[in-house]
Image (cartoon, rainbow, N blue to C red; front, side, top):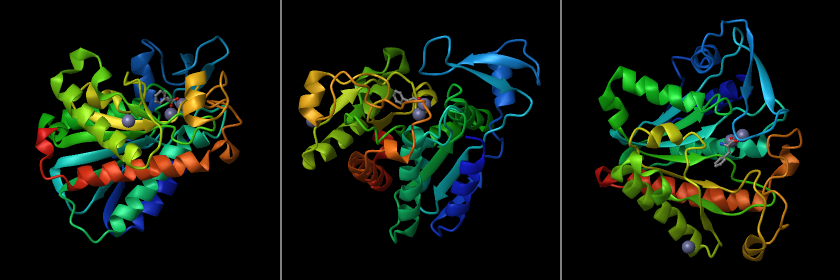
Length: 306
Ligand code: PHE
Ligand code: ZN
Ligand code: ZN
Ligand code: ZN
């Protein structure tokens, strides 16, 4: 969770000829962001931050505000229109209680592999692809918020250069569902552009899963991962999700197999979220659908329409 993954991803991407990779210039500093969250707290002071996605008194985390820093890694394809960029996001960090292999080694290893394979492709992309490896998602989407904020601060136009965003956060859950973000379920205040564009992306995912005869369903599009700051700024988004702490229904058991009344990921945010926690088959299926949609969007000549 603390930098090692970012340096590894940066090093791997530096070897890939077709992309340019950087560590996000303004490092995502938990210090800054938490000071913002916890009004009045000072660097060096310990504060309690309720963990995102968990409830209960035991799920609190202590931070030394002075010491914590997390990086976001950005890699961009060398071809494709930079003013029609397709962002592909995953978070690199985990909760401190565990290694975070499904959450979110699964999404980040997919994103890294996608960047390597796109970099090796001898095609001209129509649209630039931006592979974003966010830090500090678990602390309240800090990396993605900082990135979107940075684009806005630099120049509002630079935010408009991102045509859409795909997010991959937990795509190998052991007791999985095959979830596609429900593009039309974003709160209406996000606006018609988000609703329409996200529905187009949702349909690309469901078309691919249907073509592969893989059962799937729509899942919440409530901003509970790094696409949140993007849709909040009018950027159509989509993504895949195989489930976290919610329990499987009988109906979902009939669709996907697995164990009803058990969590999709019984090791969610726990020490047992190790390599053993990964369902390799569903990871490959999600990776296929993710790569397909990413490639369709990267090659689309009419992305303004999103
Ligand atoms: N963002 C959540 C986490 O990292 C996981 C999640 C992803 C939950 C997508 C719901 C939808 O813990
Ligand atoms: Zn998490
Ligand atoms: Zn996550
Ligand atoms: Zn369908």
